[in-house]
Image (cartoon, rainbow, N blue to C red; front, top):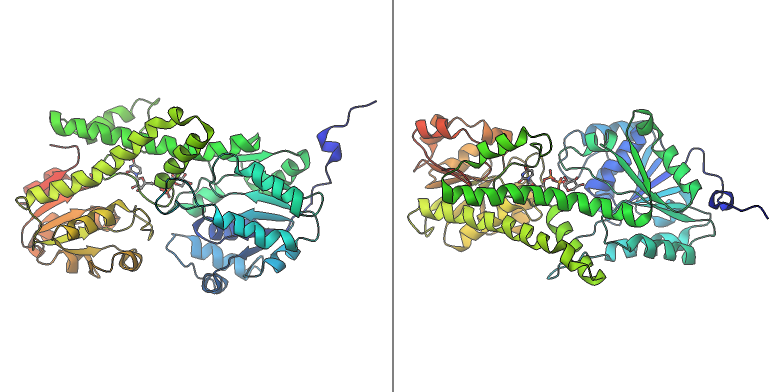
Length: 451
Ligand code: UDX
């Protein structure tokens, strides 16, 4: 008897699939707008009606450079619409991208999978024809198998799953979506792989490499990439700790290391360390999952990566306290930056905001200024004061800390800034300033990992 290949059992791939994007946060909103720009008909879906109304009006509910232009263009072209109805999504889509958040569970290391489960609860019962679901959310190993089992049990026969992790960075979301370093696609059926090749045809034609793999590998690529990046940052920050006791300069060390092409200079910037909605929670969820799988030893180094990262925040607070002769009590402390990194208004697990809040708890009168993240910061830390400009923030400061390296802070004129403050002393938490220029303008300058 002739053998039957998996491909022969698969239905024909849809020629021009209509796409839905379920969950319209940083990842989903960007993915929806970019896929529409690439010429697909796309329906963006979210349970948050106000977010959907904002997006439908062509506005982005968070700060992401370049995204609003793509969104407006996609809506104007007629390719992109938004809805809160999963029934409409089920009727519309041939391919459903699942882009919901998987945040850290409060008080635990593990990821909270409730949004993913709720998304499936809302979509699967409405499907009336075979559909391909595509997981893009960052998930613990084994999730795709679990989702595939639900699809097999609850969706029309012929429905299937692909796993397609997303590597976009905030601040570069559009660029990373339209010109990614690589695509990773995990599938079990040949026809699903063909559909994914159709969906990403414009990128593949532009030469973007696609790694075609299984579910487990696809899931793991995402978390291991983030674990590697976090490790690289914590490595250089561990070197900064050593520099602090040996008198070496971590910025020169990092520069010297970067010329070794095996090491490379990206993600080798020492300072206050990593934060945001991805790296911290992803390494913790990865450790938690490894524990469940009985391979916790393989990832025990990530505990140290996390610890090094958090120690940088404590060290920054210590540097500030030292400059104030041992106490923040009553001092006017200016914090420049609240976002977890520049070009973002995201304050999730933001090192800058964490340091600001710690100093306030220790008695400092903290004023924060961030070009884009003030509003988000104030929601989380209403106890801090917020200024509406750098000049307003600096006025009368006894101590200044630069904690998010926005361009306008990097380009501050030390002589001008000195006129504004009460005491010219600064902690450069991101190694973003020219130490020589600031010192010669009369500032006491301290930085992490530098003499
Ligand atoms: C990250 C990954 O880069 C991305 O691929 C993934 O899809 C999501 O998580 P993002 O969270 O947007 O992206 O931020 P990223 O640019 O990676 O920066 C993370 C943190 O590391 C920031 O707080 C940044 O300030 C810090 N960082 C980065 C350093 O401290 N030093 C560096 O050299 C680089």
